Amino acid sequence: MRSPFVVCGATGNVGSRVTEMLLAAGEPVRAVGRERVRLGPLAAKGAEPWPGDIGDSGFLEEVFSGARGAFILIPPRYDAPDFREYQNRIGASLVSALSKARVPRIVALSSVGAHLTDDTGPILGLHDLETWLRTLKEAEVVCLRPAYFMENHLWNLPLIRNQGINGSPIRGDVPLPMIATEDIADATARMFVEGKFHGHAFRYLLGPRDLTMTEATRILGEAIGIPGLKYVQFPEEEARKALAGAGMSGSVLEAMLKMQRGFNAGIIRPTRERSAESTTPTTLESFAKSVYARAYRVAA
Figure (cartoon, rainbow, N blue to C red):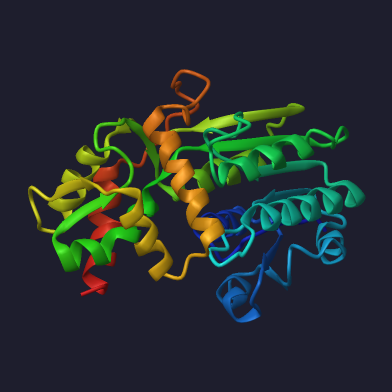
């Protein structure tokens, strides 16, 4: 019997698709998530469910034991009282377990901007994770550095429905690469199935093109029947109140605002020019007509 792949965060946008693609390719998969019930649909498709806390390195060592490869990430936790402590606890747990289980191939979900050591908010925890992964000398590791998730636009659906505008503290004229999470998952699954690993590396995934928030808002508006939808750059204090009202902890929301300042300053950018390898296929127009428009209708 072939050794399995382990997928952490298997019920999330990226992890669920990685799991499904590996299963479709005939690969055995251990699907890791916090709740057994949410792992049920993946188990029904053939995955081996492993419910548990990835902050528990003992649990993870057992999960990783005998694995052929592992997809890892630090799941979001928007109510974390100390977000940096949470990120580093999860990162340390992952790397310790990977080392003890001697997992030979690892794909880690990082981010554009992970090369920076300050002023990136939540991306700083991914910088630390990349640094710790370099200590795994016997493993082959790829740190994926995707761009701004297209799915992040879903957060503003209530704003659009209630106020008829889109907005955030990010400047409307700053071009950002934007990617659909399905393309991150596709790239991950292909790497595992094809086995193309070479030591320690990072790989950018940048979507098909850069877009400003003003341009993205126009595309999203057209898909939901609001042509001419306006984008507004909000003052940070307004955003701080809105995020706190949505249940985000003070530590997390300050990290998010710091990241948005990094976008505005142009420092959270790829360190390499766009290439065929870093360009992914799903356009924002396609995402808007399918995922975004469907979510808008459901929110009605």
